[in-house]
Length: 564
Image 1 (cartoon, helix red, strand yellow):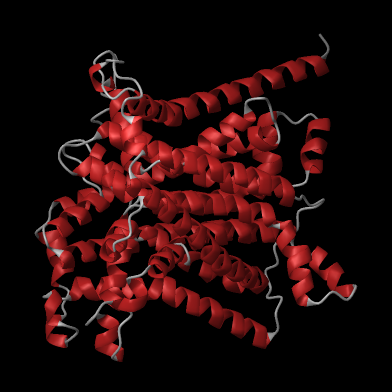
Image 2 (cartoon, rainbow, N blue to C red):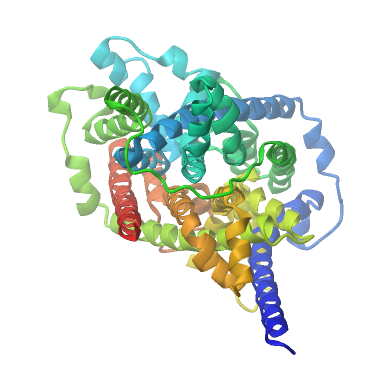
């Protein structure tokens, strides 16, 4: 055997091993709980290991007229949130990239919405906009007519989810660079023509891929839909599922049937995503180095900072201010008066509630490990989906995108059905590991979609040249495309960390005895009527998680500057 053929054989064995490892992890983390959900919907007595009465549970639920309206509301909400999120995110990303290094602060600020649990954020907006809320107490008018409406739900969700599109689009814009736009400008194209004919088509795949995440995440979001939707009498599929799991008698087969509806919606969204990606996918022949200087004049730089500041004020400052004021209020009915504001809730949080520190530590540990695991799987999966395609690349892509189509509560139920069985010699159920499985299952789509869309933008010439000169598959990942994917990998890891640090539903259902996370602590405080304690814990959680994210961003920036 010649050295070249031996190298080729070794490379093929490594690639096959990496693929088997990626597919095996995807099967254990994603396929098993989803398969359990599907089987439970088909066989209502599966918990007794009985296959009697197959499909008997489908017709009664599918004939429910309330379900039709709930499905329509869910799809309409997701489409509207995608539209508003895209408008906000793409506008912000275009300004951010042109600001260069001066715009780095906005990357940190726009991660803050992910640190706030959706149910806490929705409650913060209620405190702001309701009658006699903070806005009315300060300015004399309220926002209840807007907030308690379908558009109000869209607005609250879009302000929470637009960073997904923002970070993906911003990373793609940095790869594309300004060269194509500059060429079009030299040949006389006006700004709007360059935007819609040059810039946006080049990052179209990134926008479409991130919108798939926003769509699916909106469809499965429970906290905001429950808090605001119930107040205006709007049903969504997820709130209907919650009824099945919370109202006695608990209807696990019914919840599984409704979860299949969400899976069907996700299938349609995924199919549309594939069609749109094929139409808008582009690649560049050279990776551009991101500019560190502002590409705008003094007036344009100031105007861009003002525009981004307004968005940050509405999406970040207002909810945080509402949470802080709610935490400082001695009595919620006492109003915004000096005598009713204090920091007693923060002091009592760590003096009276001994479990608070343990909850913070558990959440940070789980979020960090989940981010590391999901980004690692996401990088490997991206190469098999984009560069090293096989007949199983499509199923792998779909499998790793699917979890966000399933409510977190149903994923938790699927994990219980899989792992709470006597025949396993060892089971992660009722341990810290089952929470890691749940978090990883839910969070995998974020790095997979973001890294995949960015890898599509990278030119194949770099990889081809490396292979010609003898680079192995691991060498291609680590030394060729790895540096170009570092930015989006870090960004996706921060997003996973942010979302995982405030994950609620799976924590409520799967937290083993003796464990508590930040979200379960906050939820239990809300449930007990201690709103100020819950809000105080939310502020502490945002500050700690935000500090870790700011540190990671600073380290990444330092590395970039050092490498230049």
